[in-house]
Length: 61
Image (cartoon, rainbow, N blue to C red; front, side, top):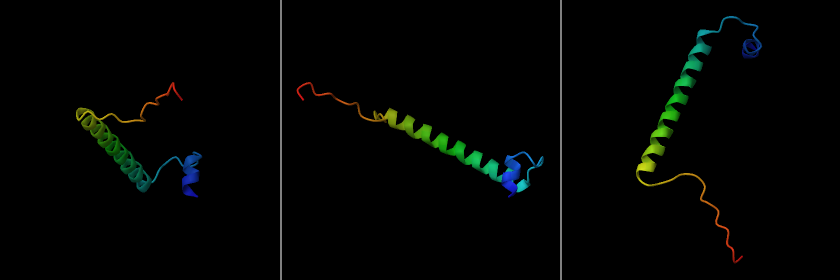
């Protein structure tokens, strides 16, 4: 398979299609990271804190 050959370093030149796919994937990833950071910042401004709630140990139990 061509992708296996590229991964193994057998091909010194990548195809335009592969370069385009890599660029689109990187752009999409950057977009997701940006939206996530913006969402977390907005939630913090509204007083919301993400993550798991702290565990409360009941000394009577």
